[in-house]
Length: 161
Image (cartoon, rainbow, N blue to C red):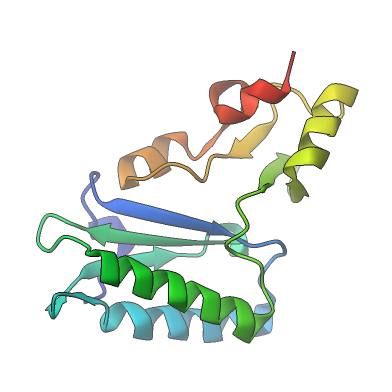
């Protein structure tokens, strides 16, 4: 059962899938429709899951799940990963590669491999104050407070001296 993202309690689970590129304007409605259809039928042990999504910056897919009513099961989480894999194929996206970093450079978002990000940090092209997206946050509250943070306040800090 799909609900507005703002209706999810702070302790709701989130999964964040960064795209290697912005979603194209012509893809957005199709993505929203696919996400709505998936979440409307998403279940765990034949019970509807209360879920939602956001597409921040037209660059990320954020799935949210209220587990107060019905807990996600291994099978339901597997179903969501298979769905994301299908989106990758359908839209020619890379969403599941965790070896990349998305960060702000002025008004723009950059998406680089960890190796490139580390090299940029060593060269001073980015700094500890560079805003990074910490896609490891796992609750709505953490997503709202700690998703966009200076690199010095995230796991990315290890790349800076």
